[in-house]
Image (tube, rainbow, N blue to C red; front, side, top):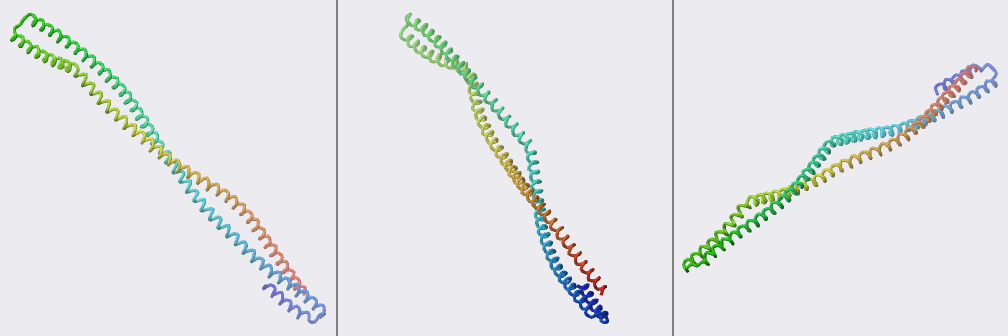
Length: 302
């Protein structure tokens, strides 16, 4: 605009300088110059308005790109946090594997102990059955021998009685016979008890051992079931959590990849549009400069 004012002033000075020349020719040139200067001024005003609009549009688009870029950076940061979490989960899982192996070894050991106890139970039951059978056989044999001996002794006693005794001797003999029978019966029980007592004690101990082993077997079975359930539950929870985290990270990465592609496409479009606007501005500036040069040449001609 300052250049236009200077050109207008120069035009006024030219009019004064040409006052001595051809008035009609000068007026025609001045009118043409004023028309050209008015057109240049209008063009400059329109160019300024267009340039301002283009700058506002450019700033607006640049601002939207900045917001999108800030959001993308935030999501990249969140993705990094997710990757760190997944790395941490994998580390926890790798640290958990020795515990799982230890638990598996403990579980195998418990199963081996249970099998050993079951074998011991079977052996104890078999031994108890053998001892009980042997004990019953010994008792029957002793009872048979004692009964045979008592029967033989009674036969001898009756034989002596039948040979003739008076009543007093017979009563005394009956009393002695009853006492002998009682003593022999008691002796039979004592002999049978003495002979079978070690076997009975052994049988009782074996039965007590069988009972204890049965209780231990049941307790170990309960512990093993509880251990299996707890270990399986803990591992399932950790694996599910890790799977959920990995799936979430995969979804975020896919979404970010799509947004990054769209953002790159948008940035390329904005870059082309910006280049076009700058090229248009350069052309406008060149046109304005050309108009000013034409005004200066016309002023110099005047």
